[in-house]
Image (cartoon, rainbow, N blue to C red; front, top):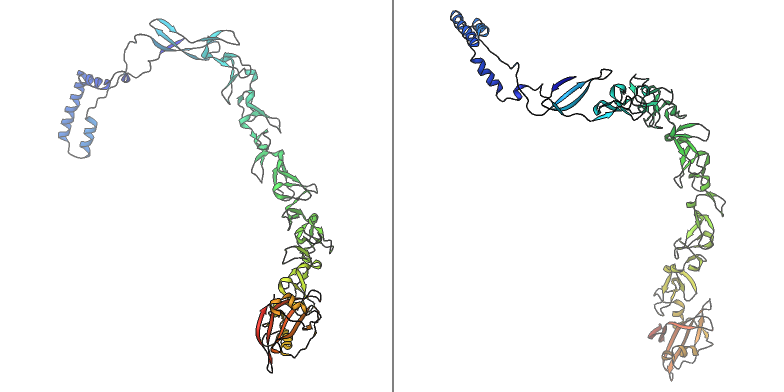
Length: 502
């Protein structure tokens, strides 16, 4: 057993402050050293007197100048009180072990804790033992083998040799190549990023799409590009061939997978569809899936839903090109269910339309009824009589803006027939026609308007001619506009009184 004090390798200068100066002082006072220095200093002086300046003088100074160096070669000391010693010792196989003990004089005051070796049953210092990574037993270090991989210990018979590096390793540090069956250290094998399997490095490959390193038996080759890729990203086409998912497109209608070149987006929904399923709208020619087309009940054409419209009138779904929207109500209807205005060209439901005098259709809001003919005309074709205030076809107005037949009656140029019910005047406008007992009438062609005319006087004096318009059927005539009273002379009728009756 070798014993070395813990302080044996300590340099003396770390224990004594100013030791170097003390040593130099003793050396300079040494007799022999002084004689040595004196001899060479005198010799240097003699040689310098003989020498000139230059390189020879410098050489003499270098060669003959005395220099003395000193160092401590040994020191004697005594350690008093308790101290620690390191003990180096061996057992059967000669492996060195080291332990620390505490010594006070010639007595050991503390030593390492001991434990029993699981293999020899001998009690030894705890620091001599290691734990077997296989059995879990604590035993002498020299009785076990050490892993070159992790530094862990185990019984020799449980150790394995790495087939790739030759290193000794624990069983827990080894893996078996999933392809070749070789047993090697885990850190010497490659791990597949796909499956987590371990394989020898030369049996790995890189996916050409994702750059993932996997086992070479986990790759598939694309029938599209010929590239190799990881098998978990493979897709199978309808023809049974295989390619990478990035080279394929799924038909959103059939669910089948196709080459990208074999699919197009639907112009209606934007979904991808296989070309073999593609169809065209017979209205617009847009490409879509055949399941997106609907048959038009009116034309039989196959159209897309946004090319169809529903009639709010009949509920029929038809080609949008055959559907129009009512400009009044906003409701949609087939052309056959609406009418088109001859005035504006707009479409509308029949209930919002009228028939013009010429037989064309127009919106009720676009036309005005001529009160004399009882026919509708464009608003621009209707004028207001400046005498009576009724609205009539402009063609019935004279240059002065007067209703021609009315002016003719007032001037006496148009004579009427006796009116069958003259009492209507005093009955409907008594404050105007009080005392009027008879009148004539000129009936319109429609029979729904009449000019009632006559005269009034006071005992044969102050004779005045009057006229007023009545609208309605024979049984329901009603006075309208203005009642006109005036004098008839050779130059025609001139107004004296005008009264509103409507």
